[in-house]
View 1 (cartoon, helix red, strand yellow):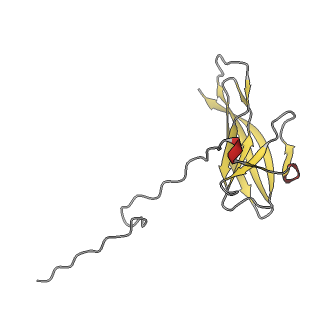
View 2 (cartoon, one colour):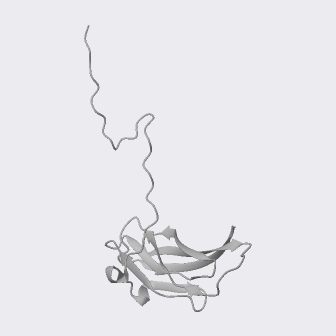
View 3 (cartoon, helix red, strand yellow):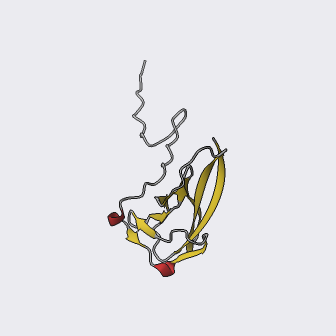
Length: 137
């Protein structure tokens, strides 16, 4: 009778019954001194409401883009990656407001929000867009 042992399978292989890789979580904006400002001429702000913050940076060697969002009272802002092409990256700044709103403060905050890119930004233009969504309370 002959016995054979199975070799250790690589740990990065999902295989039958294995767990799929966990998707990367949202990118956290680093402190401003650790970010690189994006030149104003490389940013398209035409789809933002009047008075919206206009600051954009890169971090992590250009593989993440950080933008100033705007939120207030009970609302929270987050960034979504709309699209990536050879010439531009579209970032959607989503302000989520509870519905019904309830009692909220009357203040504005401008937190940095970030998205991860498939490749460094380099010479691509950053297109910023904003949208409001209602979320159930």
